[in-house]
Length: 413
Image (cartoon, rainbow, N blue to C red; front, side, top):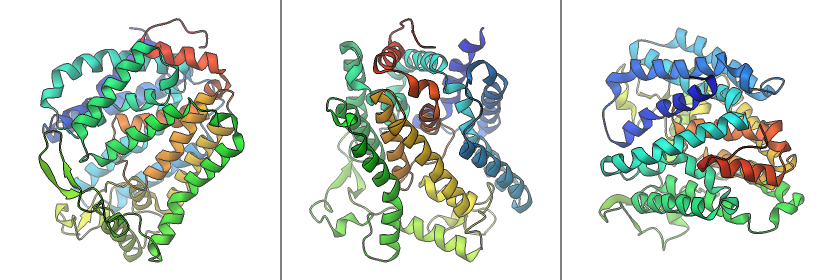
């Protein structure tokens, strides 16, 4: 099998753990197998980057972040206290090595083939697996549809119908209980529909949107810490929504309300733990988590530590400290800026805004795992940095997108 044919199938295999999680199957006994697959995936990326990576080198900030990963791996080896810490360390190595995927998936040719293969097999598999899947996981399964929604306007009619049908399934199965899924898919749909407007002609407007999205989390954090406004306590500001119960796709009440605050406590625990154990700046390593009253009973060593949380940016803070958060911010800010302000086509500007939104959403959720959600985040960041994608004209990019679901010869390699 040719190299360009092997990697797309490897990505399909690498997405299997999150699919099995959606089937609510216990896979902890298969860790060695998954780690072997993940290691092989990353080895393939490094081994064959010369065939697909045409840039002079990885972006500087991503290089810095990867070196921080190496440092925190070494740090973790020294502060780990036993088997379970080392298990967390190994898991996090694979997760935070995913930026390396840019080395191959910034290639339009390989990314198109990868997505084409994924949609063929994932669609067939979904018809078999959907009766077994938990309702929350339908949206996690169809992460590539998030990507396609951004370019809904340029898809042929048949492809539009297919993507919108999948979107309907995500909304029906996820219902209001899967708030994260609904939010991300809704934002992608809104951005896709925004292509029907002329807003992407106005760079000053796009610049303001970019600055606003990048600054929003920090502003809200400051307002929350000072007690002026807590965005997670919406029930205090939107009383009409506080009584809206969450139901699953069958109509059963799941517990909680639409505006339930499930994040303030996690923020308090992470920040308090960092101050108490003096790792605010340097991080706690990839082997150790944060001290938690809410979830500390999962720590088998009696330290009351939780290895990770649902909030992506808090994991970055715990593992890498404030230095890591600043570098992470720089990656998102630079990538989205390049796509929005330095692209020949308007479709990359849409992608840049979505990447900026994902920076905002990292402060709400975006759990760090080796799965399609995290992989696609880095794929989109890689596209933003890619000079090839940003140099495409509107017509060239449209041909590339349309060829993902239906095979067509590309004029841009």
